[in-house]
Length: 249
Image (cartoon, rainbow, N blue to C red; front, side):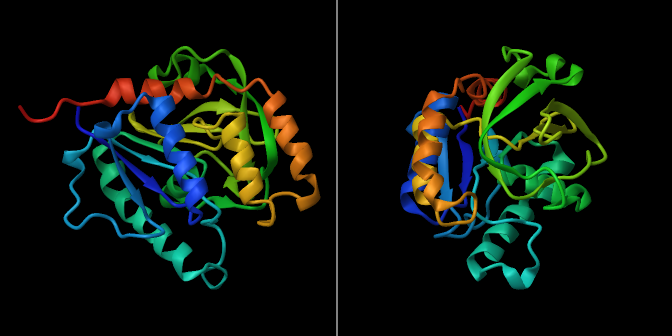
């Protein structure tokens, strides 16, 4: 199988390592099936060709695409520019893409510039997600229950459905939890790779990043371990199974 290109944005090594491990585990990706690039530490590979990969998976991160340029650190701006540089080819070719949390911000920003903090931010915790009619018919959502819980934690969100997108998953607090552009370009607001242990790691690392009052960290950790969050990982597994491609003979 051609590897999947996994782009990571988290500058904290512990968080990035845990996220990568979770993506590979939930997607059933072995060491030879994933090409990892930590964009906080390195640029995109020189001469990168999407033809060398089965698909692109973008993880989450603390940056916000809707922040004013002057509010972004040089590192955040560089990471954002790197991911955005791939979106013209990905969308024009309808190349397999799965953007997780930050990834829906990138896709929405590229397609219509309608990502902001005006509405639909969600505190760290779970969101009560529901498949739309389109979601029930989508192959990457196959096997998901009609309603399921997913881990979230984000300051910005897509404010309206971008043109050319199908609306796959909704929730009362954030309507655009999962969308698809064309036939193969997906993005989720929630974290399909995250379980309770993974979210505990992030809560401890990001407790002073403005997602929640630091004194609430231990309460949040108890909550995420008590939550019944297992369904979202089906999305990563389906994505890998659907788009895994054979390499050259």
